[in-house]
Amino acid sequence: MNYQQAKVRADILKALAHPVRILIVNALSGGDRCVCELAPLVDIDQSGLSRHLAILKRVGVVTERRDGNKVIHHLQTPCILRAFECAVEVLRSDIERKNLHLKAI
Image (tube, rainbow, N blue to C red):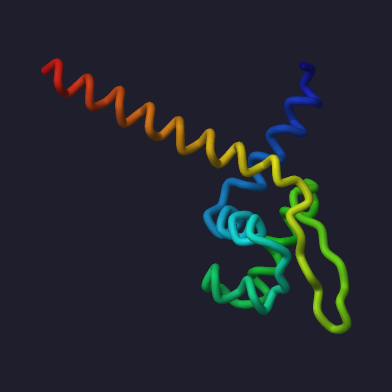
């Protein structure tokens, strides 16, 4: 891997490094949604939500299509959900390691 390849990966991870964007990706894992459906799930206003969606679109995680007046958002790369599963596994492993350390004391 070279620096540019590492930078692209870092940009994707940075795009995911916000709780609202993780909530958006999680919501889209259940199917396509418009902003009006996503806003109540993430509890922010529509303009803030649009900014978060733009970040996810820029790195290729989310795409959009028009349906009349609505803009429907789609999880373009569902494989990103494996990263979330991996994050949970890291957390479990860390908790287990800390628990073992405490038992040794």
